Length: 88
Image (cartoon, rainbow, N blue to C red; front, side):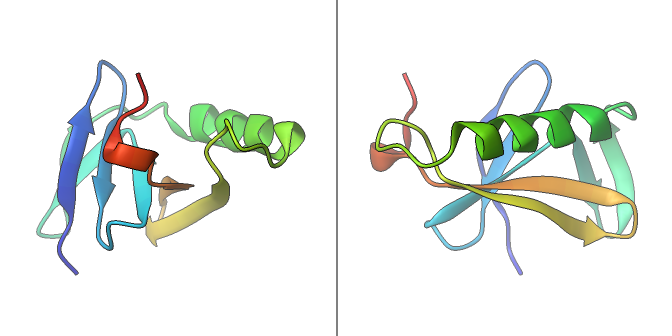
């Protein structure tokens, strides 16, 4: 599976594999090994997933598909890809 980097911020990165959903994470892995990122990210992703769950569906809010385990101990937040691929 090939990941395309869509964005990189101060605390996270956003990739896609299918141009329909994005995977938001706080670590980058290369060839199965940790490359760079934060170690204290799991609570942040879980909190963000909970916020999306509480907000529920709305046409002005990205749909959240929940947390996905990328590999043992590495989690990503799966979201719908923004229309026109831009949130601003």
